[in-house]
Length: 253
Length: 382
Image 1 (tube, helix red, strand yellow):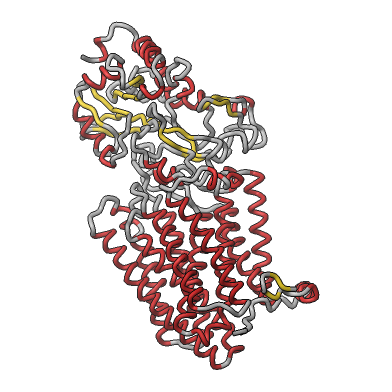
Image 2: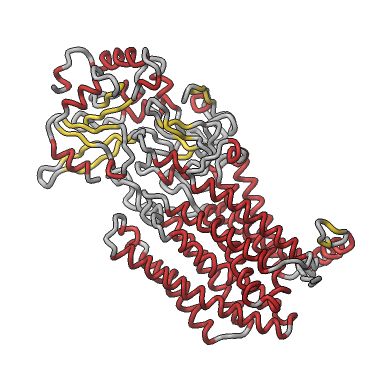
């Protein structure tokens, strides 16, 4: 089964999957993301949508799309590798946090409590994916001429945070992708999934065998999990629909 | 006036000392450290007012920079001073005791100076109470804080006992054991990070202890050499004692530094690239300037002046190697792509440099001030 076999729009399918998942208690869900490397066109729409949705400041990038050179001359092409937080099920970042500000939630999300984080940066050092960054309090429009769009309240982890004060905002904290869990719990898809032009990113409940993500994972020609040899048990899966060589290539990075 | 059995300086003594400083009789080093402290405090204010984004050069690729180096370096000296104090108390108590309050006081001050770096590095210093409200025993950083608090407490206790004239080798043992646990925990803090091959090693706690010994003994040796003329025979003995202690430390540092390089470069371990990348500076600063040259110099030159210069040289090079160790860990990014730089560059900002100067100056200024007040003298009451 390939993604082309699904007759409805995948966004509609995933939204229906969300409804089913949200009807269950939190501990019965396992949120996951799957990225089809052959479908990613490197448009960076996910990166931009994520920045916009989570209002991340300069230096904080939840959803990075890296570019790679694949193949040998003359058969060379650029391939793209989106990297959200892997939401590891054995996360190295949570163990090192001295104040338990970051922890693995029962639904598979590696959570950061912005009110607890002391901003020591140890989790950033420990993350093997470079998925975390510290909010240093920078603004695209400058420290003294902040535009409204940079300071108005934005939702993350169930709360609204306005970047108007150091103490009541994520400034000084470690930040990372959280699969837009605040949106998901409202029945919406993560920003990166919503905005993906190539429909390369899938999101859903792994505990539901009928969900699109479960079907995609089961039917993929090839799949891998980034740096899974480290024992971090990432929940993000990278798949291909035909080119297995791509999997072999990315598994080595 | 006495407090906890210690004779505190009188108001008159304070007035006279401050008067001397105001009149320009404080000594060059005291004014220099005062200037450094003021500059450091200005940077602290800048960091808290403007925020880290405008003042420091750390980022997602290099989360720890010169402020963490300042912390590690100063607590390295602090721990090393407790080691010097322990060996002094155990092996050479009679001659060492007059020096003990100075060494222990300097250990306390450098530990506090280290906090200067750490406190300004944290994104939310005001949430330090979370250490008690939400402890994470799995984290080496949590344990490090617990042990450092304890170390500071036992150091202050030892200082009080010294000032009361009751300090014994048993007290020194307690401080020594706590210092070993504390500083090896700091080594483990880096050693457990599997993703940073430059840090990841079971050897790291031992590496930290050996370099703490070398740096702290060098600092204590300077104190001993400066005080030697006032102590007569005991002073001469102490200079020779600290020279030998430094020789042992440098020998151990050479051994450990050499094998770390060999295992890193030739061990075919994952991440050997970072060891190859830093090979030049590891050999030049870590081995040649950091250990071999001071070893040769110490072997041939034996006077107090030589001990001061060589110890100072060791301390400067040790700072450089600690900087290389921390920053080197981030040189190779955790993964690479076209759009990710092959090697990560980091240059500390002026504020970060001033935090280092401020932390070091804080320890130095308070030490010199206390010394001027005659607060660091030893009175044997046994």
